[in-house]
Amino acid sequence: MSVQPQDNAQWEQALTFIAVDRDKRAYSQLFSYFAPRLKAFGLKMFGNEQQAMEMVQDTMLNVWQKARLFDASRGCASTWIFTIARNVRFDMLRKKQSRKDELSADDLFFDGDYPEQEGVDSNEWDLWLLAEKVAPHFAKLPPAQRDVMEKVYLEEKSHQEVSEELAIPLGTVKSRIRLALDRLREAIDDPRS
Image 1 (cartoon, rainbow, N blue to C red):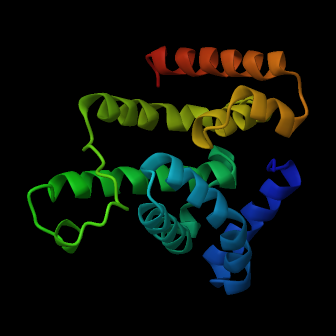
Image 2 (image 1 turned 90 degrees about the vertical axis):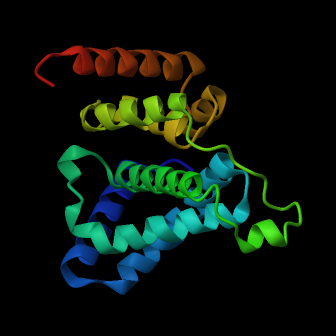
């Protein structure tokens, strides 16, 4: 399911209602829409439903608490929410790495449902730093390019899946990715950024 421009406006409005009025109905709608998508994202990242659900809960709690910080001029609501999810994921990985030597109940009663995740290695840390540098420029991409990039890099969909979901040719998906990457590369290399 694609996030259409009217959906983006709906979620931006919901974030405004949450920020200004602490509107629980708007939050409920936002939660109903994004929680399953965040769970799928978390399952791909962790390979573990419990950790995925923890990421969803932490992300949506952050959305409730920080809705006033959302700025539509810097990107759409879904980008903002998935950025929060990515940051929550990194926090979870760092926390797990820092507790590596501590003993937990999961260690005592391990039943095979919780595959061990490696800590944050230097390559992952480099990717995280790069993502932090790219994020402000990502929001400035043209909407068509940003939408394809979100689906491929945040939602981790294949080029073919994005082509089918957006009803555009596969070549167009690849062109938009190439153009977006060129724009991001130029923005990062710009000494003023």
